[in-house]
Length: 536
Image (cartoon, rainbow, N blue to C red; front, side, top):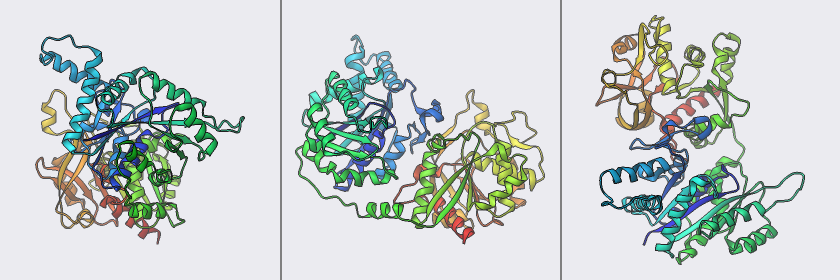
């Protein structure tokens, strides 16, 4: 019988429900179970593709081309599993399905109601994922916090599933315990209110993950146990830590994995966490630094928002750097400042490597092109991702091919030299579509990329509208640019290199989507290796 674990949040958002879900899934998998994870987003958006990156974080792309919440990326990284569009749902997606069924007469003339038809659709989707994956455990994160109006239907779905399978559903509440400076004491009352709010939806949490600045003491654990109706052993301390990859090991200090098994009347099992412990040991020890500059257009005093916007890339950099027993130091560089500032450009030599990531819009583009030019001329390891690759081609066309007016039609619809453009097929469509999801790429055996991947044919995930214009392919090659990777079905350029440079690679795809903490992405590893060589 499959088992279901629902994870909800209390007090405030952003306290780590997604990481809790990913970490618990990893623990259960380490005990030998088949595990999958799901995310329920309470937004009316059908997918995350139209959500504001600054507010919501990066758009994570699955193999089958779904645009999801960034938590889906954490699930894949911790579980080392490839998830699909079935693992993600939003309010908009659920309502859309129910309305489509009603229009197709699938309700046989019955009145379609918010309850029970919306919760039933949620349950159907959860069961569908379990059947497709054959998982022993399905972990479902409910976005937002308890008490929010938009979460009620998802909580109702969880309650209904529990009613039908009382022994096979467990509820976890992730709640925050503040420690106001002026009081100097950790307070449990907000968590008590969160539990009572959850109770009002007909749900009693089985386990409470107590997020806090420092570890919980016995007094706080006992208090939560008494006032929230849970066993003291089911109050799991989750203090702030340096690395998210330490969280599963932290949970095991309170024996969370086996506490979960006990809730399902299953025998305790040992974990196989040898490799994970080794990774955390590398993360936490003092080691040499690799300085990486990431060039972006909107730099704010706090770089947290930018880290969230490029979460998979940042994690990919970390994975690769740790694999060389080094520590990454990431600096966010404001592209607008580099447009006409030679003095600032010279400071790029202080970095071991430069990345220009993906993005949309023309703000700060000319500054990014200046950075790329400087990296190319001064042999600084460079990695361009999506937009970063396209701008590398624009820079090369302008300065090496002497096509001064080279540009992308994204920034100039009527540009005279459209080195970056939408394809002829896209131009025929009324609404040109982005290339989203996994696409194959055939590698040139003479390329650095081939040496990194050690494979002739690879598959990578995309989220792009514009491509390198094949009309300029021959000229670019004649002037020294190597077309290192080609999509064989559509003849689209996926990877470019400048062979005269120690490491100058641009990719049309997002390698971060496929990086894992224990198996870093080969391109990030090759990039970090070049960075280490520069600093030697």
